[in-house]
Every structure is written in C-alpha cells, then in structure tokens.
Length: 443
Image 1 (cartoon, helix red, strand yellow):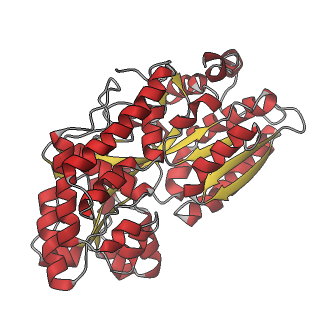
Image 2 (tube, helix red, strand yellow):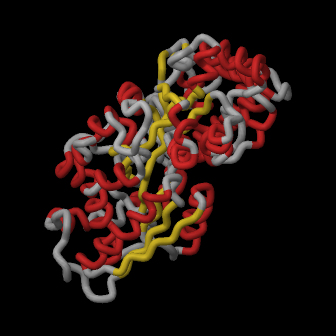
Image 3 (cartoon, one colour):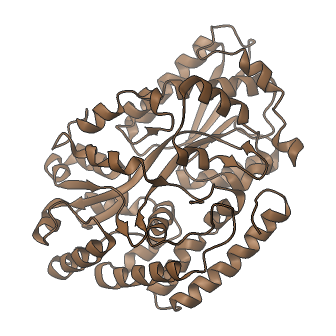
C-alpha cells in the first residue's frame, strides 16, 4: 500500500527546484497532460479556464487537453480509469475521492509546497484530502463552495422572517406556514445525490450527530442522529412535497429559479442563473449561513479536489503537479470567473475576496448580498466531519447511506431508531474493511 501511495515521493526534490510559472521550454517537446473536469454550474468559468489552460500550456511547452462531463459521472470515470491503468492525467471532483486512494499518487509534496508558497489553508480543505492513518495527501484541494441557504425574501418576510430562517426551528415553523398559505414548499433533497448528501449532513452535524468522531470511530448510532432524522421527517411531511425523494443535483436549482421553492441549501449557482434571466427575481433571493441547531450552526462545503492517478508518470507527472500549483497560485481568477462560486482554500491567493463579498462585482441587489457568507467560512465542514474524509467516509458517501437513512423515516418505511441502526450496521462493516487495510484509525 505504501509503495502505491508513495510512488511519487521521489518528485519532492524535483518539485523543490520548480517555481510557480515555469519558463517556456521546461518540458520536452511532446509533453501532454489531459484534464477531466465537471461542467461548471457557472458557464463563464469554463470559458475562462479553457483560455487559462491553453496559455499555461503555451508558456510551459505542454499540450493541455480538457474533457468535461456531468459531475455525477466523475467517480465512476475515475474508478474505470484506475482499473484500466490509463486515462486522464488530472481528474477534478466535487466529492471525496478517498475511496480510490489505492490507485492515486500521494500529493503530499505539492500540498507542502503550496503551504510554503501561499501560507495556511482553511481546515476543512485540509480535512478533505488528508489521510492521517498513513500521513499522506491523496488529493489537492484548490477551493470550495459554501452550501448556504437561499430563500425567497418576500415569502419569508410575509411569514415573519424578513432575514430568512436562522435556525432549524425557524425553517420548520416558517417553511410550514409558507407551504400552508401558498403551496410553495421547502426544497431540501432526500435523494441519493450531491446536494441531498450535504444538506442531510448539515442537519446531522447541527444536531450533534456524525458518521465518525475525530479519531475515526463510528458514532452514527446516537440519540443526536435519531433526533436529526426525526426532525427531517417532520420537516418533509409539514413543509415539502414527495418530489424531494427523486431529486437530482439540478433539482433544487431549478425549483428556486422557477419560484417553486421558498428555501434551498445550495451554493450560489442557482442564484447566478436566476440573476441572468430575471434581475427582480434574483433581488428577491436572500442568503443565510449555516442554520443553528441544538449543537450549533455548521455549514457544509463542496470541494474542488484534483487527483492524479498512479498510472501517470515521467514528465507528464511533473507537468501535472506544476499545473496544479500554478493554478492554485492563480486562484483569484478562478474565484472571479466562477462569480464567487469557487472560494480559495488558501486565502492569501485571493486577497480581494473580502471586498468582493462586501460588494458583489456581478451586480447583486443589494450589493452586499454575499457579505453574510463571511460568517459561514469560519464554521464550514466537509465529508468526515469532525474527522477527515477518509476512504470509509468516501464509501459511505458513494453508497448514499445518509440520505437513504433520512428518506426511510420521512417515507414512513422505518422508525428513526430502525433506520439509524440499519445505517450504523453497514457503516461499521465499511469502516472495518478500510481499518483492516490500515487506511483508517479508530477501533
């Protein structure tokens, strides 16, 4: 296992001689790298990135190829390419790739180099790519997006909440009142897809529950988890429709844009889409940071994580690592051209961020709409909280155990105690499997 994970440690010495922004001709003629990415929810980002990658390639004598697919296809594609031993050089994912760690290069070298160049990173970014059991970084996190509340200002003002829901109790009471008065439901998914995964975890964490503890012991079967699951069932039955059981990753965006949801948990892509087609409608959307539950207010974050499969080697590997470092150095442009969707894991790389959040450069009304999100940045979590996104956590995510647990109770198919116990049984098996491999601690 160590041989596979540490296959590229010889590159540390090479990397130490490389500076950000290599001169043209550093790499031999014929050097190529290929990137597989998700189609960004803010189209202007991909238009900019294509130009960025071409310019970087020209400056470094590297041909850069870019392929894009729907974000939901990335884990399966990564698994297939690792199995085949051939494919893309760099693959960027929105969810934890930890379950694929045995087929990935250890990127501890460029993670350390980035710390040397850019200073400290945010803790949830470290936790998203670090594997403490073997002390390696299996990925590189450039940035993240905040899974914040997006609410209909007029509807919530009429219900008595002019600044939107601040707590989960507010969400239940206000959301139920709005649904009863207007027929417009809340839009929080209970489906095996990315937004449901994060929204359900936010609720779980804010109620004091978690899949594991900081030492990678399974903790899901708890009174806090049962309380969270029961609360979600009440929320669904009083303030939502059955459509949330079949949602895809685009459903909450579409519901907000069409005026068919009073509140969703999502980054700002839905709002940005609305802004382009209905300025007045966009002005009627407000933001909230993580909602307050019995254990606090914890906002979820979607990550931008790049990995390099173990089949990549030679000049291609060196060029791939250089590209990752250079792109991180230039993350200001990624943040800007994603219209503040991509926020930096290394804050010093985007010195303008506070200014942009205080006064949105893309014409929000009011201009300080994004300022509320500053309060969320210090209390963000990602998969694995309060621990790291280890391979067991990655598999739990891949099997959609958390939203299925919540959905069972909301559908009336099981009691909270039954659903939680069933989920815990499967989680224990998964953790035991990865613990036996020596890739997680606890036990």
